[in-house]
Length: 123
Image (tube, rainbow, N blue to C red):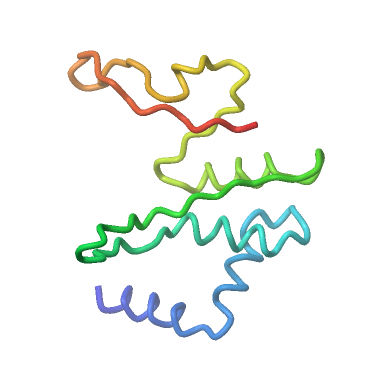
């Protein structure tokens, strides 16, 4: 445990860690460093904040990725989906509007029907 903490601390102390992580994301896609950094921040998420009488702020970061055709948007999102533990990826082509918000499936352990949240639309 101590050795693992030391390794994590050594990585955390790297002066250009943010840039290195961005460059290591989808290495086959050149440029787009700002887009990669945004997706990287989305992967790590944010911190929930209690704003007192003004309510609460959720820590999730949402990303809308827009661009011209052929600019590697789908490849970047596919890469992020592969490294995200709870990622769901869909193009919307084989999905109904209802299936994108929620769907019924069977629990693998109990075989009971359960309601699962659907995937966000990728267009």
